[in-house]
Image 1 (cartoon, one colour):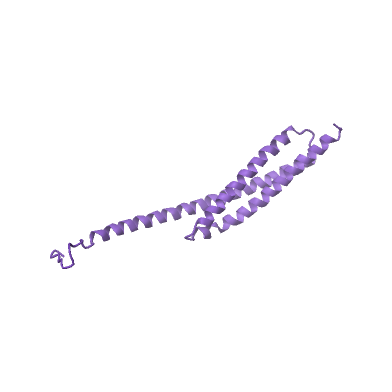
Image 2: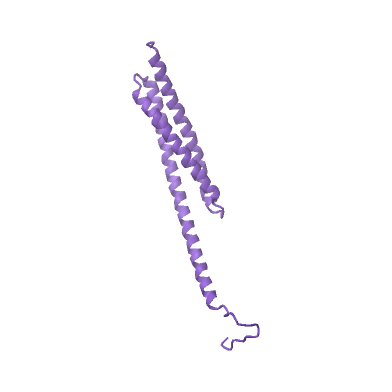
Length: 153
């Protein structure tokens, strides 16, 4: 193996990690924007879109995590990575970490709103059940024939 082959591999893993963090950063920015619109989406009666969006986020997040595991193993095995590459990767990683924290906060806020909506819906259903029970008490009894007259009414 030529002596310069290691340097190519070093640059390759460094560049792939930089690309990874840039893609993750862009994705997190889009998630932030969607989470900022989440309160409006939660007011809708049709929550299928919200559920679909969160499932897509989960799938994408898992794929990114799996990719990172592979890249991290390769990074750990690679020697002599230039310090300029290390610094660039560290800066990108800090940026991503900051965006992850922002997404976490926005997601918790959205989850709290979803919890409030769920509780309000449960209370409404309980009220409807109670009202239905009350109406059932006032329901006229079934009569044996059409000429039946209930004198107790």
